[in-house]
Length: 127
Length: 119
Length: 97
Image (cartoon, rainbow over all chains, first blue to last red; front, side, top):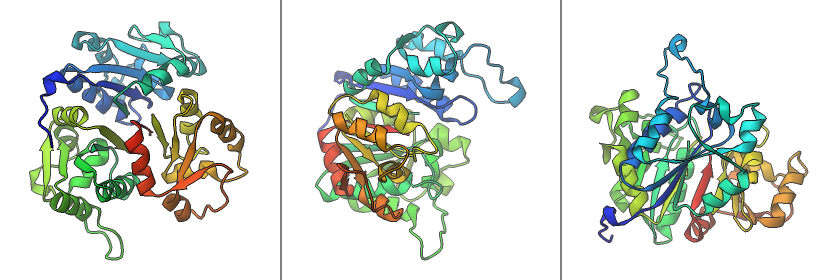
């Protein structure tokens, strides 16, 4: 296989959060993956679709279930230069939520717009 | 073409491990290189060497070892996901390598495709 | 971009959700329990037919066989793992999990 210098390659990698937090580990381990990948200077974006939008909901208190809360970690993504956070408008509206219900600034856009971005990616990983 | 595989679900409980294996086998047969299989989430359970399925069932652990030994496919196990689930070097399949998510990032960067299998 | 769907549409919204994101021309491949989507004359036949107007639809034949699905919707192409690889040769992959 060819030798690549990773520093010279910037790939477009989109993470799609599709699961609610806490009920399964997918969102939490997905977030861990995003944080590591962010350190590699790739072109990273995160889309919140279906129950994935619940990961961003304000007011989560996980003390009673003794599971580590991580909603606020999404706020830290900005510090890792992960600034492209997209929320699927239909998913948000179906759940009776608005942008004001979310812990972090996001772009609420249509499924078609996110779908178009997906086709421009080198890698899409669903969590 | 160089292909990486991300496997996010455990063996037997879900078909993901079987589909990933059949896909890898077909890709290799067509002349492609499978660079690595990266085990994540409950997918790390694919890397335990103590599986003992009934004799008339497929042995998923041995399949991964075979793919590694015959076709040089790296078998990488996420350290954070593995530690959470009690998987360490003592129980690992031959060829298994406990490693960080940085290696998954490298797999995503250096290959033409990253194909995910999971639940 | 190739979209794979591995869930029965009766137990998961993967198919209905993902169909909002498909771009014209994107191939759709049903695998594992996803192949129940392409059984002819089920509740999802109508939405599948709408998808087929803009997207080529494939189903993995070993998964259809394993589930005893013989009667599949018109226009759905059945492929084996080799065909799956050929789609991946042509497209980046988005696995809807």
